[in-house]
Length: 149
Length: 149
DNA sequence: GCATATAGTTAAGCACGCTTAACTAAAAAG
DNA sequence: CTTTTTAGTTAAGCGTGCTTAACTATATGC
Image 1 (cartoon, helix red, strand yellow):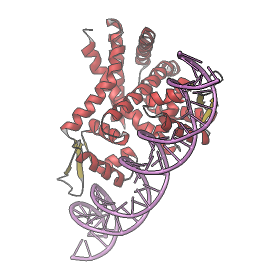
Image 2: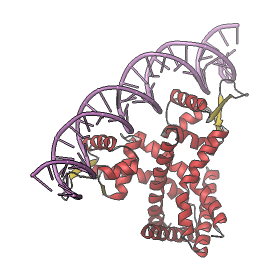
Image 3: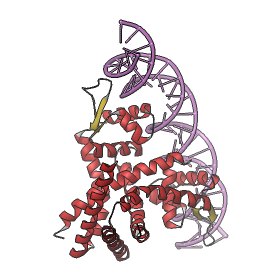
Image 4: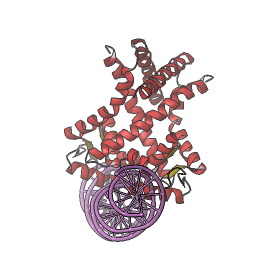
């Protein structure tokens, strides 16, 4: 609590540039691939969530279910998504990445991390260890928050 | 070098969720503001760069100068950008954030960090210190790379 | 079992950003 | 001084995603 100001300063500055870079890299990736920004956004979400219903996606993307339905349609036609019926509720659909979609999105992530690797290579062994530890801490803190909700 | 695998694992996992979240938060912010995603992208860039020419923006955004010119036009009309003549080269324009644009974008950044603050609050003092140190390390590594180019 | 709610689809219409192409104006090159 | 290059603007046309509204089909409540 008391050290949160000092904490913020160093964390924020780094994150600003990180987000800035990753936004730019994402935009570049989207342009070289045959997908649009909203499509990329959807694929990214499904890469994290494994599978989703249309309404879940609609909520996450903050658009109507109609819009999502149409977008999913295109991505299914492009063989980047799979859309199947939910056996428990036949109204609902289960949307997930196709193998092709998965490799595409992982390639995108890989590209985004080229820069992270550069930074990583600029670290001494000792520094890298400290950084790795910090991210472990952040990871478990994140879990605590999520489970606490 | 040898620890780069272990390094990657912890760093990447956290960054995936971080990027994922910041993408979602950015999208939300864009929707509540009266701007579009490309406009946000442009404003964000100018928040980092202070000022730019049209061609600079074109290169960064990977679009034609015509597109940039049109986009800038809208943002100037919305009073989010200022466009003035470069005194050294009267063909060129100097584009920068207006006060209104600056406060808007800073509000957006602030919102994105609400989650970071949550995580930060979930850390013990000792943990926070380690994390802050790690980001200092990353920050200086980043500088080394940039200056080395 | 009938009414209502929920999940998703389809179609029409609109706004937006992007591209190409033609253009103006200033700087650089010869 | 003339030619060419560079910086940016403008306009037409296109594709895309989004919204609203009407619709189908399954599930739930009384």
